[in-house]
Image 1 (cartoon, rainbow, N blue to C red):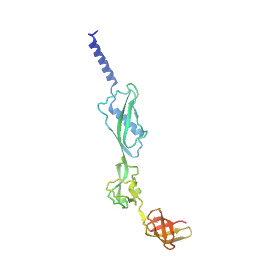
Image 2 (tube, one colour):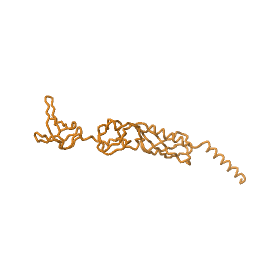
Image 3 (cartoon, one colour):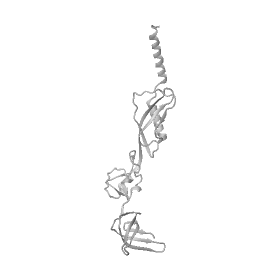
Image 4 (tube, one colour):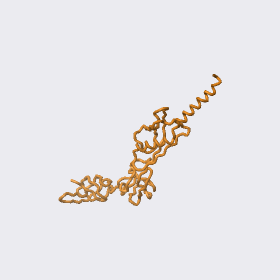
Length: 232
């Protein structure tokens, strides 16, 4: 009995090796493909996007799954940035691992073609539209030139800066102390009076104005530089 022990051990090792060879290992490529497919079905991004997966440790060896891999996340929607995505096998020798995906998203955005100083008014000549990576930007970036045209910048910005709405304000068309025309229009008549602005104002803003004829302080809407309107 003892003499046959080496032979029995050899046979046992042979069968184990054969069973392992038949079962095989789950390829890292198949895991990556499952993750990319899951991302494509659950991503919530506008424009183009690019997915990069952090490679799995080459020493990681999982048994081949007899059924399609299950991919899962803690969040139902995939967004730009780094995401942790799980992959598991639910049959046979069950296993579960986590992968890391880096997702970049690209959109056509308004970019400064030249530097601007604080308080400068943006014109079409300042801007160009380019495809840029917006993965790490706030969602208030400008996508159309019309959104920024004739707006005033709040700080100095360099060439190549992607414009956001937080960089822009409506310019002051009227400043405190400016002489203005107060216009009142009705269906049957129109009156214009001289006044003085008591505060700064942007287009459409309601400001206080002093009527120079009567001395009354009234509220008026800024129309353009030097002109406000009053509705009665």
